Amino acid sequence: MKPDWKKIWSFSRKYVLNKYILTCVVFAVILTFCGEQSLVVRTRQARQIRALQHELEESRKQIEQYKKDLKELQSSTENIERFARENYYMHADNEDVYIVE
Picture 1 (cartoon, rainbow, N blue to C red):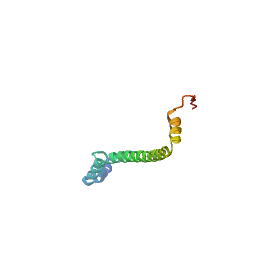
Picture 2 (cartoon, helix red, strand yellow; picture 1 turned 90 degrees about the vertical axis):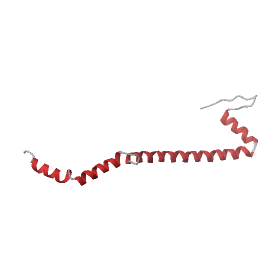
Picture 3 (cartoon, helix red, strand yellow; picture 1 turned 60 degrees about the vertical axis):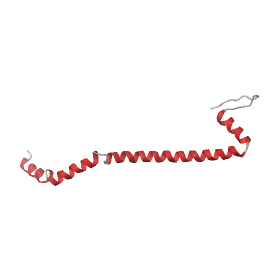
Picture 4 (cartoon, rainbow, N blue to C red; picture 1 turned 135 degrees about the horizontal axis):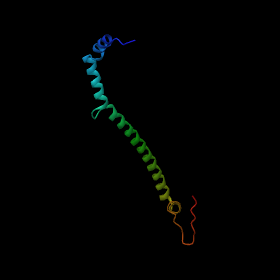
């Protein structure tokens, strides 16, 4: 069974090759793929914004932890000594330090 080319041509001429439909399709392609405000660029920027917001939240949590540590260190000299031993592996002259991971 052969396709009826006259019907196909009339259909394509009537709907596919319509100047309004072609204009809308070209406009949609331009909006989707071209320019600084295209959907592709906007999607990429939205992904970057989410990543930066996550990084900002992690930084805020880290700042809060540092503030807590600072308050604890400012409270007494024993805390400063403990902090130095735990984080910087400092020790007194008569001590041996063993690091177990």
